[in-house]
Structures are given as structure tokens and as C-alpha cells.
Image (cartoon, rainbow over all chains, first blue to last red; front, side):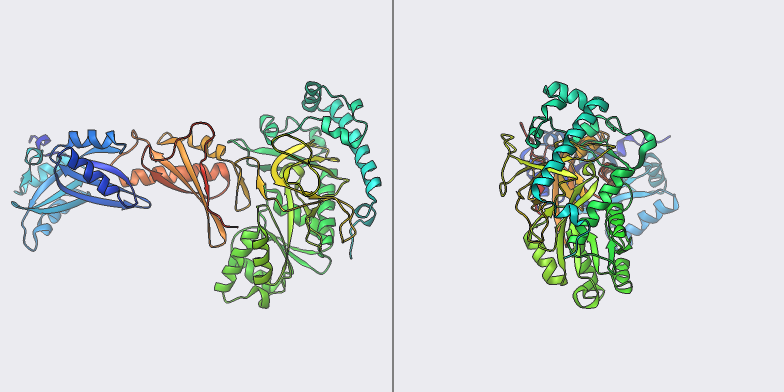
Length: 145
Length: 433
């Protein structure tokens, strides 16, 4: 059995009211702690939002943000390398679909080493095994953190 | 000028006061003998029925409050037995518990007669069609107006609240001449009618509105009268008095409080001193003839003033001006009484949100809109949007069940709502009446 733990990356999720300045407050706090944001997304619901971010030091980020009053939670996500050419996303999405893995949400970034897809799925262990067995590249959490 | 009961309505003031004294004396003896609750109250206040020897002696009697009904839920202070009760109504209390009022046959008769007099005094009569757009059911508004108007021979169209488009169609098809509802609902109706291409002033037979159950102002009255081309009459009451009870006459200078049914005082809310005509204070009402649930010196919490002189319409009974405010933090949302304490109580049952909250009341179009802001607790925050939406839905549901009025809920960050030392100011009322 493959060890999946090292592919589970700690994302921070921050509850935010839907009003001007909230993202700035979060970003400023992270800057003050010298925490680097590698990727992030904002999910918007009626009147509030959840800011999700991959950072190089999630523990420090959590402490800082909680300290200034934010509601913060850790969530496990996985990161998959994508081809940065047309069809890159399709390959990964098809693989997950065929394997009956449901994506709860996802965001992507295109870095120096290529494109990376961040995924929150219903069953991370199973997703890791499937992706590895299909020959795609998963990024270990140590790459970020 | 039409009168429903001219003997009473034009009764000379001295005779009316003698009648009030007799009714008060009888009432106090009855309660001292048959109401353990009020007997106890009088004992504690050191007053005996024999101490009531002139009408002004009413000031010796102890007050009653809304909380007396709540504390004695559901019917512990009723004086009538089950065999004599013919109806219940239920309204929301200041906390989670509602308050129950009960009626004997005579109570219903007096309630209906009071409205028959009032509605006649503002010109409603046989041949009129009164659309009753107050809620029917546990709320007193619908059934109260219904029986009052039927008694005087008007045709009642019991539309109750909601389904505004259908209300407007029926208003046209059945030639409604009068409507009973909250002033804000009537304004809303006017807006909906315009969207339907119906102009209430020109395309309907509506000529009068009997409007109440929420605070309103001269500005709103002027707008309703000018825009809709009708006369707007104020009506006042609360379930503890029976329901909607007293309405304005054609002079539109305050609602007549029938002296044979009720005795009013206006007191300085700070000192408790009795105030004279024209002076603003807290309205205190004693119901002189209620059987099932007598109310003595009941402090409703409304701020207003009264006029004592004989009205130009010929009626000798005192008039009370439109309610201008509250002594407590009660809000009226779409005609329904809402106390912030009810919200506090409801939130205690939802551990996912803290006990801090803020209420923002606004008018969206003509209707009241209430937003309750609550903080998501740290323990219950998860990354899942659906969980957060679920918390919000749950709070909305709980508040709706407690308050009987639809509420929007906004989730806010923990610690972001103002904290108070001493008296909390949790309500932001942005309504421009």
C-alpha cells in the first residue's frame, strides 16, 4: 500500500465577510509574519466568503490570523502537476472522473516549474493512489511547506 | 354623521366618568375575590378594593406588564373557567415563550362592538366592501376586523396577508371600498399594483384604509392619501386589550378610546407622574369590562399623548394620538412585535453562532426588512461553504419560528460585532417612516 500522507498539503481556509478590505487584512497579516502565499482562491457565498491559500508556513499563518480575530481552519488538499499546454487540465480532470473521484473545489497556478492544479476531493487517499497509478506527478507537501 | 351606539358615544363626560368609576369598582372587587394573581398584587401594593372611592384612585392600583402574561403562561391569570372561554389568540412574547389571551362571549361582543363603533365613526357602513389584509389565525388583526365589520353590515373580503397580486385582482373584481392592513403593506400593494398596470386611485373603488399594527407618521399618511387617493385612518390595539380595538373618526385627530371599555392614563416614563392632555408619555390602559383576562393599568410600552375635549364629531370619549415610539426596545416588523430578547433566546439554541448579534432594520420598497448579523464560532468554522450555508439556514429557520416573521441572516467574523457594557444597543433601525 502506497503511503499517501506526504502528498496531503495543509491549506489554510479563512472565513471572511464580504466587504472591502478583508483580503487586504489577511494578506497584510501574512506579510508581517513573512509568510509567502503560493496559491490562493476566494470562494464566495451569499454575504460571506472563504479565502483559501497554500502558504509556506501554515502553522504560523494560522496562529497570526487567529490572533487578530479571524476564523481559520486547516484543510487537506493535493497538488498535481499539469502540462502547461492545451489539454493539460483535461488529462487530470478525465483521470479523476474516470476514477469516480469527486472534486469539491479546485484552483490552479502556473509557476516556474510549470502548472499546478490544487484539488480538494472527497477522498484524498484514494485520489492520490489513482493519480500515482495513472502516471501523473503529485507534488509532496515538502515542496510547499 | 353616523353613530353605532349614540347613547354611549355621545354620553356626557360626567356621566361617562361615573360609569367608569362603577365599572372600575366592580372590576377591582371581582379581581380581589377571584384572581389569585391580582389579589396578591394588591396585597403587596397595600391596596384594598375599599380604597377605590373615586376614579382617580385607580392610581393606587399596581401595574401589569407583558411579562405577567409570559410568567403565567399559558392561562394562569385567566379569571374565566374553561366553560366560559370561547376563543384563544396567541402572540409572541418577549422571550421564546408566546403569550396567550382568552375571551368569553362578552369579551368578543365588546371587542366587536368597539370596532363597530370605530369603523362607523370613520364612515364604513352597509354597502362597503372591507378587504381584511391582516393575518387571520393566532394574530388578532384578521378576525378582529372581520367580526367588527360584519357586525355593522359591511361586506368582508377576508384576504389575509400575502399573495399581493391576487389581492389587487380581487380588490378590482369585488369593488373593495376599504382595506384594513399595515400602512407599509398598503404602500407595497400600491407598488405591486403599478407594476401590474393598475392605478389604485383610478382603477379601483378603494376610498379608505384602516391602518395600524405598526408605527407610522404624518408623512406616510400624506403619501398614502395623495398617492392612492384614499383617506387613511389610524387603528390601535394589542392582543392584551383584545386586538385592534380603537380607530380614528372622520376627523382623523386621534383614535377614540371608548370610556366604557377602557380607561387611559399617560404617565411620565421616568417619574411615573400622570401627564395631562397633549403631553407625551407612556400609555397605560385599564380594560374595564374584560372577563377572561382582565388588564389593569397595563403598561403596553407605547409612547403617545391624548386629547380630552369633546371631538368635533360629537363623541365625548378621549382621543389618543398616533403612537410615536416605545419605552423599550420592541420593534415592529411587518406588523409583528419583535423583541431583541427573543432573538437572544433563539440564538442560544444554535451553538454554531455566538450569543452576540446585531439587528439591522430597513425598508426595502415599502416593506420592512430585518437582517440579523451573527458571528460564526471558531469551533464550527470549516472550509466547507455548504456547512456555513447550513448554519445560516438553520439560524434563519430558528428565528423565523420564534419571531413569526421572515428574517435574513448574515454570518460575520467572530469578534466583529460591537460588545456592550451595560445596556446593549443591538438595533440599527434605518427605516425612514
